[in-house]
Image (cartoon, rainbow, N blue to C red; front, side, top):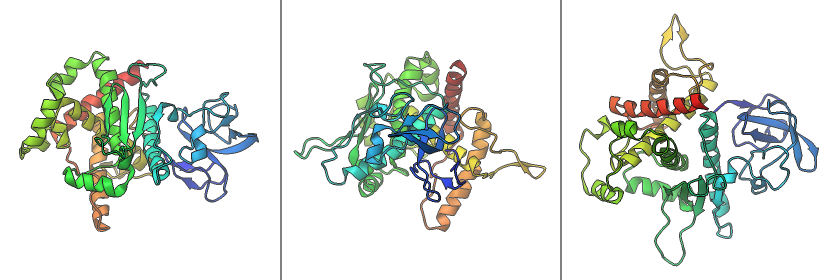
Length: 356
């Protein structure tokens, strides 16, 4: 994530801000330029960016802005009632008649908008359900039925990503993290994992990369349900970290790819944040850091440079967390086997960017 500042007064901003805390100017996010900008009212509900390289057309907020779950601006010339780039992919939102669901939806949208920030910055292709009725991307935020039927499970199927609304409850999510023996379980992590399944379809299956992917992640043609049953029935070998970023990645090549994809998103997004705040923990030459804010992990940094920056950063932030009595910021080990898989994903992303 970039470092954002208010164009009106210079105050540091967060990605989710809708108004500057210092000068109180309204703020909106321009997805096409990844710019959080101060806004000047024009007429009615239309605004113009104070200083953002996106043209001069007045813009309206996404229609979900009225629920305080979105600060993105809709495309120009669409006026009121239009959805922004990120919200156009919503198919089902939580039932707002259920107590607590407004807050849960707010948390879900924070994670989803950060996901789309990364998709846009990486210049990845994405189609909604209108553009591709069969396998276009859509999000269903679903609640468990009160009638006691099977609980909603987070997952992906042919472009539709289901996120169980209950995952927005911190207590539930932490309980599941402990029960499942996971090191890390967050809403943003769910979004990044499930979008990995979508991009396996788009970039691997339909992108002519199946055999290359199988050579790295294994044969995805093995029966999925049987593989899951076998995974939960066995005891993990002591050396599993040599090849997998998480225990769940061992269950099936699809899950291995999605878990690795999620970690690639973790890395490039967090690294951009660190570099934008001038954090240069890592190798130096003649007293000068090799890595500077000019290096863009989304578009330009070579894979080896990304890893060289990421590893010392995680050591430092893990140590900071431990100093505060918190769990590790990044409780994973990127062994040579895992880095090979991350490199494959990095190479696929760069190929897509170059072809765009």
